[in-house]
Image (tube, rainbow, N blue to C red; front, side, top):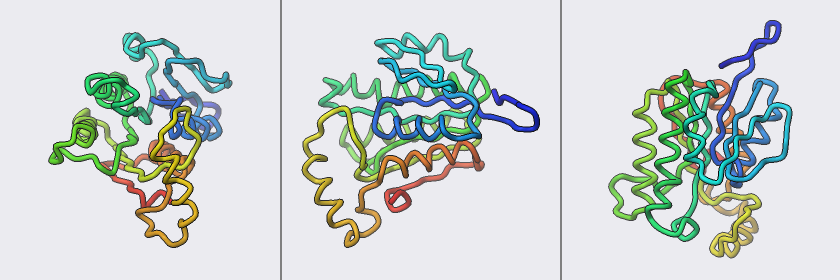
Length: 220
């Protein structure tokens, strides 16, 4: 839980998805924030060491769940996400985008975390029959049911940043979107990963009761 040094208090934050484009930006922002005393970032491959960072590593993140109760964090930032193509199947996609976020968030809440920020999708919906959109809608719905005092759901549009994976559509569209940036409506502009990270970190460091939604127009 919160560390105290003198009269200052420092938060302990769990970051899920710290190897993705948004997760990396959130990790960098959190590690550099003086209000954060420690970051727990479970990953499948090791991260660069940092004095504030605890980096549990396992090829399958499920193997780290039994240890999650000892982390005792104050807040959760969930930037986990994949594509059906990369995951290999709908079941594998749902595991990454739904099952793991819910499982880790429940563990954090049970040990006292009261704030959560979730990266979702502008297509998240319980009424759209598309599997991707429905899964995103379900994780938004069920993350709110866990009981966190403060929940921030971020639905970015096109994300600007360096990915470790190749996504053809983004490689084709991003340069055009950047060129036309001043002419596009705010909702259609590229959302820099650093901007998304700022919203995620700020929302858990200074949490407000209830549920808030940040969309593409808030992230440009």
